[in-house]
Length: 284
Image (cartoon, rainbow, N blue to C red; front, side, top):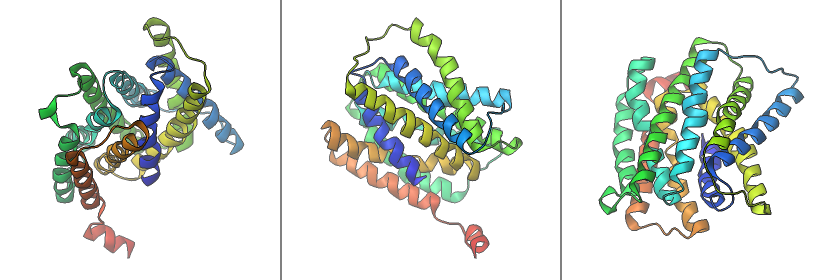
């Protein structure tokens, strides 16, 4: 999960910078194409073959997590700063907490609730709704991207719980389905012209190989191993890191409230991921 946070924290900064070089749908199609080729080559080098995964749940993950989350969040970056939009997108753990009980039968534990309180408060300090939402359309899109991701994460958990699915094979299929869904949209939705400079190519390469290929593979590995609630809460490290990276690389200077919010999020993550008594006894 630490590697996911590092990978995706940087990806939001890159995604924001890429808005000057390529349209949002074209960018998503390009990054999934690069990710598919990269992961398929890894699969082949390991001696594996691309085998179909259960189509209903795979399609649910592809629609809500692989493409829905990416499309909504990329469009939100057209209207707001990276720090603000990523904070809104990462309301995802709140939606997971609400969805996991009815859809997965995962009742929240006391430590989940105790960790959610400071983390949610920290997220609100990052969003700072009393200062305006950085453009209402962008804020709504970013929030909907969090809802979409939460649904996709729940479907991912169902996929791993109900079926014997090989992790790398499932991730390759998600990239392929992402291309199938997004590519037609790139021809239908008006976008800016592609600026064919080295920054565009390097950005697509990073987002395709690292953020999408490696990042989604690591995320699916996390979801397959822990509860959806813990996975969602742990991902809150991404907006905390993005605030710092946006400060260093995009000159989006964080306020005192944003720094306090980052600290509260980290406190919530510490509480949620602290081993429970039962997990400590099992480990012993």
